[in-house]
Image 1 (cartoon, rainbow, N blue to C red):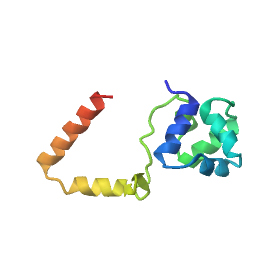
Image 2 (cartoon, helix red, strand yellow; image 1 turned 30 degrees about the vertical axis):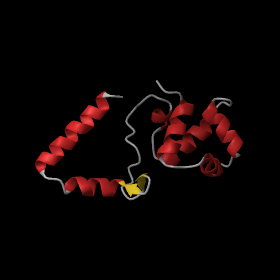
Image 3 (spheres, one colour; image 1 turned 90 degrees about the vertical axis):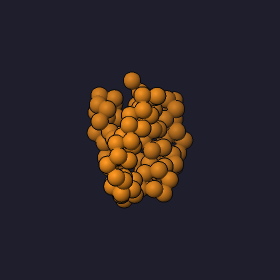
Image 4 (cartoon, rainbow, N blue to C red; image 1 turned 180 degrees about the horizontal axis):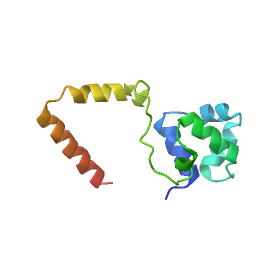
Length: 114
């Protein structure tokens, strides 16, 4: 099970954010935030609550009690680089039935190699 510090780092990286950006949102220094992610400083409850609002995930997810986070759910925000989830879904919808089945098989294959 991942620790809170790893989860908040992964979320920040998934959203292509700098530590400074998240620190500014929280009203703490970049160094303080860095210490949270590196495990050098205990993460206060108020920070967990604010990060849950910021990333639109539950505090249970941040604390490792649930694993339901599927990534950024805003279809218009960047998903990977400058590609949005809307772009991905749109491209998938242009595939024919066989291509969609093949894509699903490939995704399942990739998940097995984790």
